[in-house]
Image 1: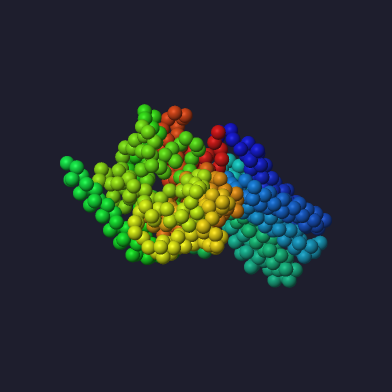
Image 2: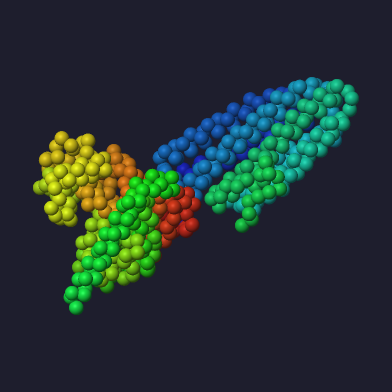
Length: 233
Length: 296
């Protein structure tokens, strides 16, 4: 790249760093959330809820930076696509932060001595691990403008989706006791939030493809499953 | 023989006049934009432009569609103004300058031997960088100047009508209608430029060439001229040279990017495409670097 508009390039780089490091905030929040789930730690869950302000704050900050860039630098071409993508990514980050909050809010509902179905808990903890790994992968794919790595998120997301379905099957036949059924219902809310985090990671991957190719296509079309994924190129 | 050449010349002219009349009768809606009159299409084929021994522009081929605004962008010296001036045979007015290749307005090669350059310049009007009204003439006379040359014997009332229509067309009528006898040079810069546009459209050209029409204007006058350009494309084919990339992005439908490989090398057409594509996903890295300001 010829050496020109250095200050502008610095601003763009800083904006991207600020946005993508929002993913690190989500990873930290998810780690605490899963620990709170595993140990039914209500204090930790409260901390997750309080700390979500940091993610929301980052969202507002990046949003304002984007408005300023658009107003003052009139970005075009790849820069414009990058800025548009960062706006989407930041929105996904904010949503994932909210999913951690959603999970943390239901933890107290299970009570201190909730009956626990180990098979279901194992799957939920696996979903959390898988979500964490997808967040790292999404960040790496964005930073490296790596469309293949971004596209692989779909395969990773299938694992979370399958675990979610397994949780559902377990919940359906979890038992007659009201307590365990209530616990299983609550855990389904947790599984659902984790499943959404996986979807948001895929959304970030789609933005990687948009920055690189200029084409926006959903990797997997939820309304037409099995059809029209992005042509590999 | 001179007689034969003259006859052919007349024939060439009358063909262009017939085409013009035919086009003027049509009023169609195309591409969502209301088209009041179908203007003409330029086809530029393998054009090379020279100033003496200096090869200024190399192998340019492009189609400039009617009733659209085509912007020519590129850094100084890339040949965009030279290309623009070749579209109404103004390039050849520079001593030693020459043109190779074909420039056709619809199907008529404007460089064919039977074509009168004066007629070409009537069909292809030009608006220059600095507003250049005839300084001693009134606003009215400025607009009517071309009419007096092109249509001898035109009546006063017909002239009045055309002057009003042209000034309205240039979004200037309301500002000058009460002082049409004042000198054109007494108007503000933005008004002078719109006066020049009114003068250019008074002779009902097919194409308007604009060479940085806003570079001498303030932002308000610039936006007024840009609005005018948007309106004018319903009747004319417009080609605009601009250094202001945001202006190209705002006013044009198609953008053509010119560049040169190195100083002293001829300019060439790098990429030409729909303006929104050129400014969001250009195909060439060279275009990307230029539109995003990474040149230098």
